[in-house]
Length: 307
Length: 168
Image (cartoon, rainbow over all chains, first blue to last red; front, side, top):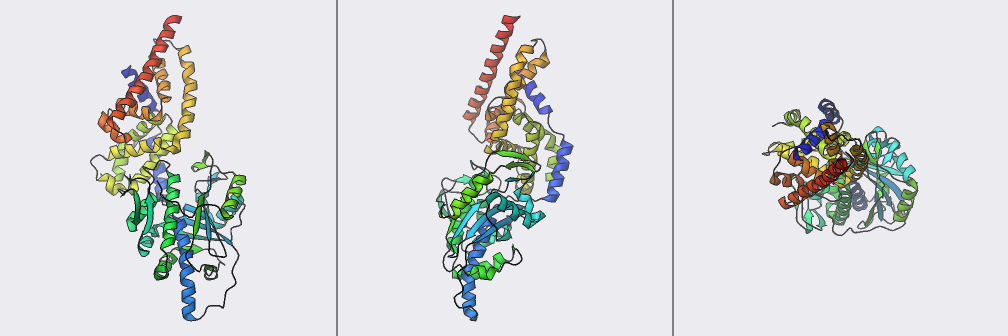
């Protein structure tokens, strides 16, 4: 029987795709996209807002230019976009910034299917296409967007003196060589990047990674203080792009104290085939309900330990 | 070894391996492409290893066994099971081609990890230790995966020859 098994497997293997075609595809993708699977734009962007929150009032006070008691603004919905170096979207978060400085954030998996493609390619085409699709999916008006390169993350974590996270179990990532013990730990620099990037060795792959990003984000927000806000704002400011017509300084005045962030992940359905590989389906009716609940005050302000 | 050289040398073999474990050349192509993209960004580390091919093979295997491909794997299995049902009735036991196709169909419906172990043993000619490395499990798990796979295949084989014996 063993020979028969050998023959059967060899026959199966013989069906392989043509190596030349695969090679050409590989070259094409190498040109168009660096494989930088870091999904953390969320954190940077919220930190940018939070940092601005702490620093702007301080600066204004120093220069005596602060308008007397700025009117408390209403809630604003901001789409936070984390990109790789080629403007592909690696992380997408729809956040509602309350007038009181509270933040509700919903992570949108970047592989959600829209039309015959995926969300992750829209920003590069036209930021307005991305915000329009997000509005259609969630029925939430997107007031502004802000985009940031995620490669900045190592330094940002260093600037705040490390970010506290907690792991359920020790893990190792054979790809980056990073290894993390179980329990509470403080991460910065390369370790922070590795923590945010790891997917191999996590049982739920991307889903676990999104949870890690949320845990990191919450840990990061907790580290922001007046002492590091200036450096942080300078660092983050280098790589953040926002839509024209958004007065970020005015926006930032809503933040007066430590920022509390509630996070959740938009539930998605089964994988579907798209022209750019496998995507995830999302039902607009469900998405609207979920975001509504989250923005209405549900969701967790701490993720506890993550995988 | 440089990344381009590695790809030139090993791409076809990787595609064959991935096709054998996935039983779907399109899925295999996707996985190999994605893995090579990731491998490239880490090539300084991987290229310096004793056995880069083994490492990349492990990445391919992990990717296939990960939850993301669970659904695709199930669909392929259902499709193949349907095919397999029709094979025995048409079979002429003397026809080696039909025999082989029947075996292919039975292998295709094995659980993913068992099939990966089987391919590593019978196609890549790996020992228990190497299979354990690729699958990220212990050698005793490898042995039990293999013996379960063989048991299933043997049971089918017996049932089949019995059926054919009665009818002929």
